Image (cartoon, rainbow, N blue to C red; front, side, top):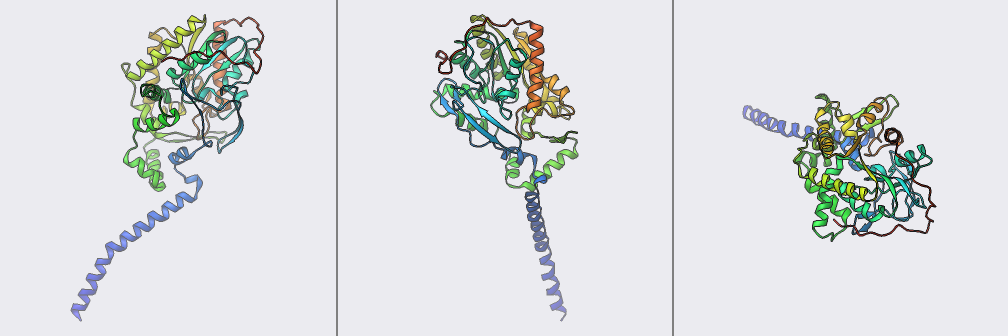
Length: 392
């Protein structure tokens, strides 16, 4: 009897670690299912990663990488916005016909193309509305850093007489964009650029082990999110208006790494901008460089001030090279305290944000007293701008 009791106790003791492990696994499983079933509990990183505006099918272009589809009229609806996406005969966010002469020609990435708001509410159109006697032309392309902007300007912009070129820089992605497009050109532009830039971006910023874990385990992502908030950092901000803004922690880490004035990406960007300036001056036009912030820079700086160091380095270098620079960081930051200028998950400026940028640029134009162009007949809707070779 005694030995039987001893054997029973040993068997019972042996089941304790197994039972504890089973309870732990069960708890993890239930926690994972709970996080996945309650939308408000979905980790911020998951919401940003899974946010989509539908399949993006740009039209390949050997000179500038790709363009949006021409003559587009498509209703786009997402959890963040609904709008009518429209393009002209080349795939830019303008209405036809193009003006015969242009007062302000815009270059940039999707921050200037009205993504999420449409042509009428993109800031280039708002600037044109503020000056009824002046004309604007928007040559923005998704992901276009200054090197792509230069080639876009050469191919599509120089055929229209103009007075001012505005190169819009979105530092949060344009540093990588400069490298991606240069690498694509060096490889002979042999493959689809949109696919190339996405794969190249993954190589530039490989995902850490824990980031890969969070992609599979929402509970792990939620625990990481809560731990960050406990340390004083929040990747989710709420406003009195009821709006929310979700911040990309990976982009914050990238910005917080800082930027050296000797960084090759800065040198490449400056070289591209010098090319744009030389081409603008050859057309009798001025160049203005406008720095547009990301929501990570504006709101991440509240707990991580170093995310603003890269833009300060770039602005200093631009001024040293005698560029005209207009930063809208302060305007967006001050006007964005009570109301968000950005969409919740999407990276782009909402209608309010586009209006802030437009107002700041309108003030600059009034201060600079840029004269309106001479009145000339507009081109017909069937006309096309002259085609120019775009060299690297």
